[in-house]
Length: 241
Image 1 (cartoon, helix red, strand yellow):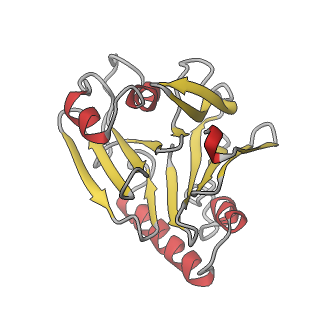
Image 2 (tube, helix red, strand yellow):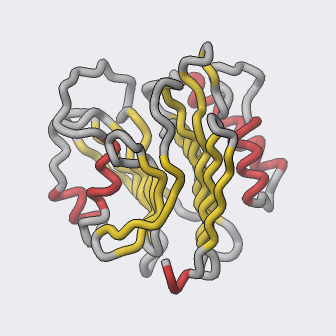
Image 3 (spheres, helix red, strand yellow):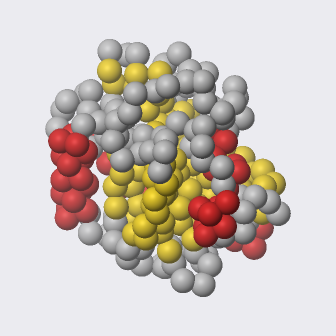
């Protein structure tokens, strides 16, 4: 929910890894499992209170939501619905264009939504909602990317995180799934408040790490619950996704 990396891999797929930075008072999410949404089988961890999620993947679409749009905002509740429902709602649409043009964004707190579409051409879209305006742009799917939530991290820290990511890629030109998970655990400069795995006075911290490893031959979901110190791995044959 608060930091996301995307790395294309040689097999024609990608690694899509997210750290969820949240209040420690928030009830632990349920580990990922398969759900039916919009005629597809979709894998995602679930918030047990709202029933939503921050990351999900299927054979065609993989999505991750980060809090905040273009810049940090002042929350002004009540909101019409939780941001956690957005990804689930997305799967009721047939494509990105339909979602962008027809979804009701009004009444939802600002967010950034990263959408990977693997059908035909390989496309990544970055959709940002400011609370009053919606924008969308395509991202080069052939290059690695990192995103951080604008609600938790200043532009300076976001830039620093991009530099850590570039340094990681330079040192790991053929990085594996484990390499990326290590970056999501240990990336940073020793500032525990703003490291990739963060901790702010044990009140706000990284609660979990989720990774989708997807290619034509592979569909793997890894989920690390850092609060309960439990790891979950789901490997799915692509014909059953």
